[in-house]
Length: 422
Image 1 (cartoon, rainbow, N blue to C red):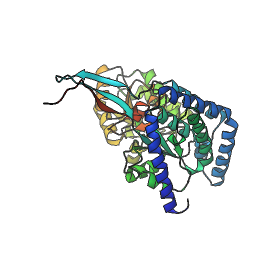
Image 2: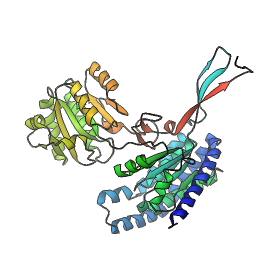
Image 3: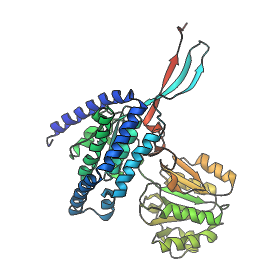
Image 4: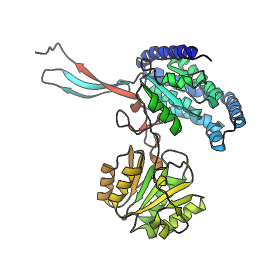
């Protein structure tokens, strides 16, 4: 597969096989899909040693190639990771099947009954980087939603991804479903990505999972709808009517529970009236945890140890122990800041003022908006979706964490008894 024409032919073959498999999955029963998921989970548990051995080879190669510690951490599988992948497939199997669900049925004056039916999207392409667990998660969610999947993982995880995909294929065989329902791209040539995002005859939607550069490339080059988010510039606004203890607890968790996820707070906005009460104790917590603070002039007047925030800090997704802090005079200024610098991902308000909370919910144009809760809850599992294929800041089709329902569409259905239009 070194020649572009060979890769092109290979990718077209993958696409054609996925389209055929999608037809088989669309008519698969819930019991059949669940059987495949349960069998795949059992295979992952059984062959944990094989998976870890393949992953050790990937990690060793990545280390030799000079990848940093954060990259190696994302790439590395552990026994608990394999267990979590297996449990994730079982959790997906336990979720209600959205496919075939009929809703909004109503009779029209003509006597026909009109409604909607939930159906699979068809073929979903997933392009992701160094996290091998995405192979199992994405395959499982797409399978339960009745979609065929084409997976293009990062080259650094190729051995791990193949080992995981082999166990997914075992599950599909066990349930009598086509192995081509889940295909892992075998070549590591980057040309495959360019071909994949242009396969509009074979792929219905692309989901990129990875860094900003990958997502920008996919969004720029794709001829297929893309479910994506670019940045996670997430905010917590502490209102003048916030409970100080609650505000401190939420702002601490939103930043320090984990630094690398896209729903971690990157900018803290604090009302001037409450800043002297919450900022000093909160910043001591941050200092103890090694968080670098960058504040505007008013914030630095309250906590002098902060560094000076620059204009770029307000629109930066750090994914690191760094936090920008700004003091504002009112709710409108806070929402104006979010509208200007935010990424429409996840934003939260801490307040006891119902009117302020409701205005924040209505007016902040983000895919997830929270009242009195940490931004870290903006997650498919925490929202009760079982798992997520990713988080979308799109405004059409799916927005926010994308679970099973986001991997389906709806079509109009009509029940008649011989009616004709006059």
